[in-house]
Amino acid sequence: MPIYEYQCTACGDVEEVLQKFSDKPLKKCRYCSGKVQKLISNSSFHLKGTGWYVTDYANKSKKPSPPSKSTEKTTTNQPDKSKKTTDKTPK
Image 1 (cartoon, rainbow, N blue to C red):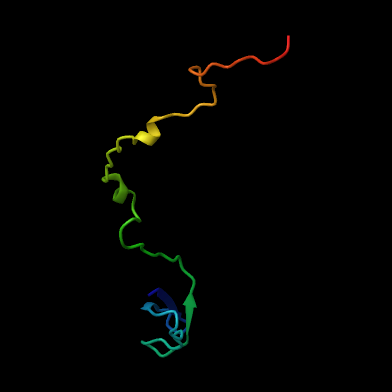
Image 2 (image 1 turned 45 degrees about the vertical axis):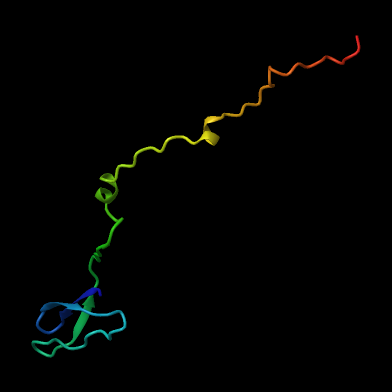
């Protein structure tokens, strides 16, 4: 839930109020019953849970897995030298 700031126009008191988005804004000061207006302030929020901090991933060391047989073979576009080719071009 966000925290909103309200300032009383009569006494000048500034109050922070924890409200839901669906809650109606305050209209009266709780000290002098004067009219209050919502202030625009810097918003802040906290990301909670795993995965939001750099340190969450820094300590996890993964060992590289050994290459599988299918990745050991490298295919190239060069002709196979073990096969003999015959030149069938006319001379």
